[in-house]
Length: 133
Image (cartoon, rainbow, N blue to C red):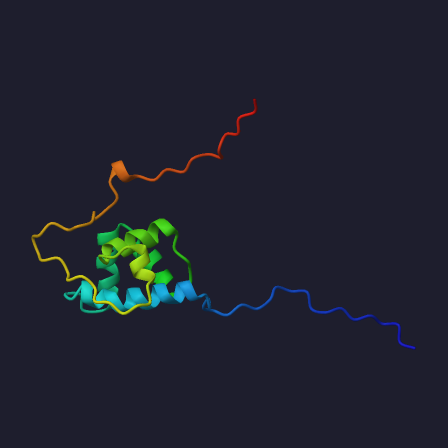
């Protein structure tokens, strides 16, 4: 009788290199679809990402990592990216086909801020205070 016990491998489960989440895939597909239309003067994806970063106020590396599926952007960043593309978050994630808004003409006023202003600054609050009578 063999008394040796064997244990299953207890290491970390292997994860795919790209996330398989549906929301992340929709985000990547829509942004990659809209960037050439919104930034027609940009010659390649790198210039489109730089233009999107400049217009949205979100870092270019954050946008690049989100488009590659390496990181998930925060909701504030997704909102800024959607606004820079001329859409709301719900429109960005809508799977219904629709034409994007035309790019702003040079010299015209943009309908969205190029960078967050101090009046729209989002601050984190500490945990909510619970009153005890």
